[in-house]
Length: 246
Image (cartoon, rainbow, N blue to C red; front, side, top):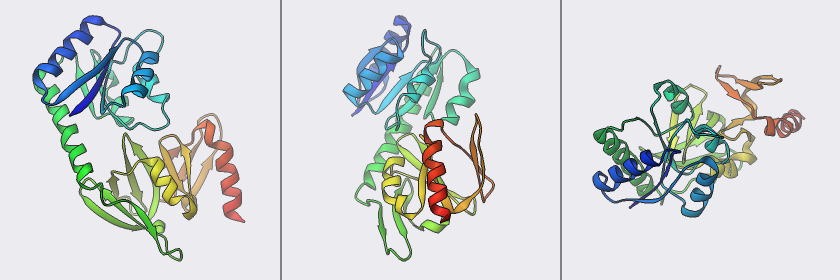
């Protein structure tokens, strides 16, 4: 059973989406419908939903603001909007789906089923808990959406949160999507020289090529990828770099 919350400032839109979900999506329960971002935060903390159907243009705070209020996103986000122009930004922040209003029933069913399959695969790998072994050569074993991966820390450049999951980027520019959250990855890997530099990113300190400070701070990794640095993480990053270089 999937539990969902609907966030939309228009009462009619909330009613229509609730009806469509209950009528056409099997084994899905609408836990609550709310009209604004602050109410959504309370509803998410209360119900711990699997999916949040989120409108974008709302009074006071838009839908993207909601995601900024959580350090870790452990639910799937499906944006529901009448505006196509937000699609690129939505997927950049790892939205699971993007449904244009008026909502197409087939597209709604498809996105819900994709989430159901993804969660089922993650649960099937849940017994394969990530762990580190061998202090002399740190190695991590992680469950992914395609099975298990075995990686040494020196293969990993940086990690990026993708909702409930984490994408691991390697030095050779390949990547793996693990079912372990970014917070859990940090707990496992911080002793190996990894640090969180953004609410959605953590990096391997050994592979920093350039740290550009300023209003829009970022790090360039040795493989050429750019990783944004959040303003709340700058001090810890500077200290970590100084310690690492000693």
